[in-house]
Length: 441
Image (cartoon, rainbow, N blue to C red; front, side, top):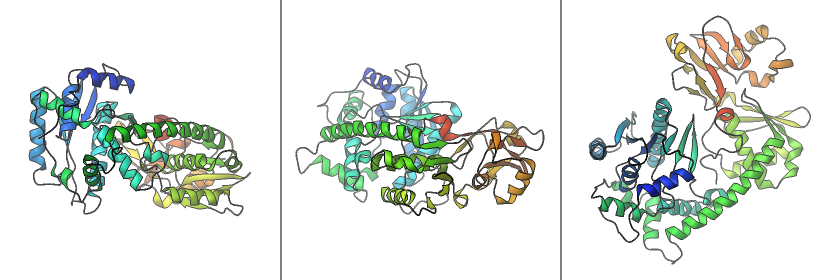
């Protein structure tokens, strides 16, 4: 343990003020991610005095001592009067590469699923000013532009009605340590935080003894904040371009107006194209910027004949338009419907109780069933059910065993079995173009 009192301790009122600015109501039940380290333990201790809160501890099972450390953290939280849930990452074998990234993905998936099941809208994390400075330095080293250098946002949409909230981004770590010291609370030190095999640890050590006076956490965080304002201005114009240039359909495809690429600077439509890809592809990460540039060059070229990126197909469409559809080979396969199913990263299911009772499955409609559907639903390319033929194979379908019983997006079912309601994740969880995606630099 260690720390400094030089910056003074943090109060629950400070945290409540920050949560209010981030849109979290005072009476709202929240979850808080707790690793057992100083940062998250401090946030949990302060939250319990101002919000109904449940601490979520994830046992990654990556080290022999992890379960004992999780139990110790749970006991400390119980002593503070904080309700606690332990979530376990179950994996057949420990990842050998990108361990921290894999653990982070698993952690957020587990916590997001818990929040959805418990109808908790806000998941709080203890990312602080020093974390923000480290993030900015790491992205600078990777050649990031405005998006990456804007650092972490105060809130982020995790999907399925869950919002990640970071109320401590303006708070230096020293204040968190000072708070725990004042409250006489101990915490767990993760040995990986001292291992310089990880780039973040190298950056942390550099910032502890900076080569230039300006490389301080507060100055770097202030720069990130200014970059974020610039990013928000770009996003404003991206949304306007998307509304003008792209038509989105709840069946999961989009149509681009090729002529509109001439209306805005390159950076605007490049970033906006990422939103189109996320809509039709359902992925959680943005493609590399170089790949976006190659895609844009292909789309605006005179001889455009088609392009594929991140599981999304771009093909020529009548009247100088471009059809954007899911790539069939990249789609999620058939799986059993459960209460928390999100299929192919795109379609959320609700009212699934009957589906579980009948062991219903969800999967791509596919080419095998195209003839059957077109025989039963006529005029698919005309009238109210207008769907391009290229889209049919990519639609979600409900099966009972191998028997096709419904295509909800087309309003089709063969008998009286109650099937789940499917809604496109993007069109229900957030405004088109407003969602921020991980990996966008």
